[in-house]
Length: 167
Image 1 (tube, one colour):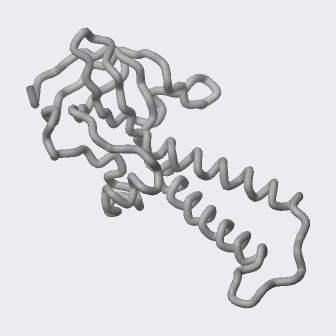
Image 2 (image 1 turned 120 degrees about the horizontal axis):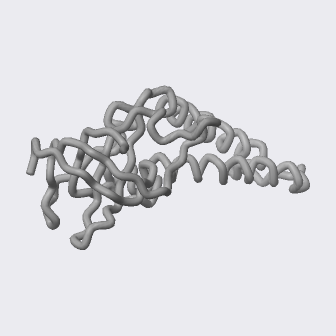
C-alpha cells in the first residue's frame, strides 16, 4: 500500500493532541478569570502554598502551553486525522498546508467531510506497536508518548500517514 495514490472521503478532525492542548489552555483561561472572583484569605499556614503561588504557577504553565501552541500555529502545515467514510473504516493522518482548510475569513473549517487525493507514505497494521508522531516537528515532538497521553488524555495511534491535498 505505501507509494499508492488513493482517494479518501471522510471527516477531517484537527490533531487530537493539539486540540486537547487548546482545550486545556481555554480551561486555564476560565480558571484565571474565575480566580479573580474568589476572596483572598490572608492567613497562610506554614508549609502550604498560598493562592498567589498557585496563581503564579498556573500563569507560568499557561504561558508555557501558549508558547507551544504558538510554535505549532507558526508552522505552515497542520496535521489532521481523517475518519474514513468507507465500509472498512480506518483512520488516516494527513499533513496539509494550513490554508487548505480555511474559509474566506481564514477560520479553520475542520470537523467537516472532505475528499483527499494523496500518496500513502506508511501503513500501520492494527495491533502493531508502531505509532505515528502527531507532534513531529514541534516543540513537543521529542516528549515521550506516555507523558503526552497523561497530559492530554489522547492516545496517538492511527493506521495511515498520507501526504496529499484536499479536494
